[in-house]
Image (cartoon, rainbow, N blue to C red; front, side, top):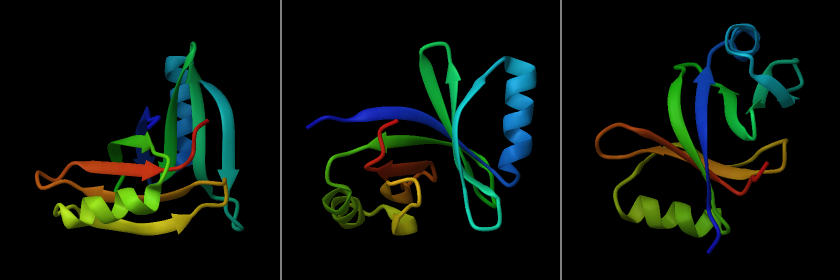
Length: 116
């Protein structure tokens, strides 16, 4: 089973975060996806040959995004093991089906089908 891991950070103001990361750290914008109100929901920034993902979120903070082949089965397994789901399975406008959860120690994890 193929899996890919991407660093992820959520920001209440994703555009401001992108502006800062580009200006301060030299990241390059690879892609952004916006909702109907023009708010960035998903962004990919290149760092050399690598990539980080950003998303809008009220609480902000870091997490890890892991691309999996069967996100529905993965979700069910995580729930059965005691993960607390913070975002139910959702079909995103950028083509991913994904969910988010916290592990028992409170760390955020994001899983989906999207591979940049």
